[in-house]
Amino acid sequence: MAQHQETNAIRIQTDRTAQMEHSTPLFLTSSFTYNSAEDMAAAFSDDTLDVNIYSRFSNPTVDEFIHKICVLEGAEDGIATGTGMAAVFATFMTFLGQGDHIISAAAVFGSTHTILTKYLPKWGISFDYFDMNQPDSIEALITPHTKMLYVETPSNPGLDIIDIAFVAAICRKHNVLFVVDNCFATPAVQQPLALGADLVLHSATKFIDGQGRVLGGVVAGKKELIHPMYLFVRNTGPSMSPFNAWVLTKSLETLFIRMDRHADSAMKLAKALEHHPALHNVKYPFLPAHPQYEVAKRQMKNGGGIVTFDLKGGIESGRKFLNGLKMLSMTNNLGDSRTIASHPASTTHSKLSAEERTAVGITPGLIRVSVGLEHFDDILADILQALAQC
Ligand SMILES: Cc1ncc(COP(=O)(O)O)c(C=O)c1O
Image (tube, rainbow, N blue to C red; front, side, top):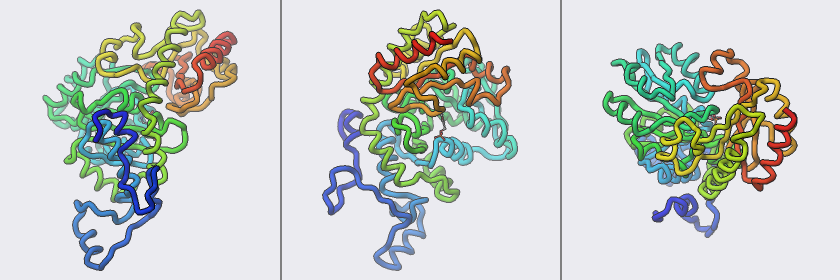
């Protein structure tokens, strides 16, 4: 392993095959073969053996992706899944059972909210939400049945931030598993395990892919926590495709340089819009006006690639803003090389009631911008001309 993570993200690679390829090979195969009946019998007799059997269980290209993520996150082991939601669901299903209780930040991604509120209760697993801006309220929610605490930091789409080390200390005291969704930051910006989290997970679909091509998820942590997750994924089937793993492991080669550029442009955008007359406010983790600016500075290397702002004209202005854009893409994904604008109140979160939206920080005029890698002046010019039409 190299001394610098930027180098590991580029140089960690599957052992070169007899073909002497330079770029990492893609093992696009469903299953693997054996030299003898005895070898095959041995492979099936012990599920701790390090041998490839079937790509639902393991695959060398997927293993390369997992290994890189583990090095970047400072984890002993990991497991990859077909989507970020499969990573979230596999984490819940591996560690929670009937009668258990989970505490989650209220500001979590919409589908995670759906699992917590619609599916877990169906299987006798209860939940409580807490406000990320009030971390002192967490301890009172812990019961003898509490098994897991779950946060996203920064959160989607509200960009709320929580002190990971503070929450980790509470979880350690009460023997509660602490899980952090690190999708918005990526390991290039924030390493939750080093701050005391037990498991870190990602939607690799976002900044890890970085070009809006494939879906994927990954969970990393201690070996003893990953092994039961491996058995869950191996048996229930939300495994990552080797093709997607190949795309994602190639993407990791540029993760650090991309995150630096995303963050640099996002910071410039946040500053340029901060006092714009059409906006109530602009939110970005490294803007001093962010309510958790000090925490962000402590635990993040930069502010990441997402900026949000609140249009004074509410829902109608949100629609006008999107319709006024000439270059920015109108899509719900994020973490792409192309800058993306979305208006959660009229799209991704339109099915929530106004009260539910307010509770997770989604105001009628909230616009989320995933700042891409284009020239900054072009990004700013498009946003300014669209704002002029609101
Ligand atoms: C913070 C966060 N977690 C999880 C997910 C789910 O990931 P996927 O879409 O890859 O299933 C998303 C998707 O937007 C997300 O933003």
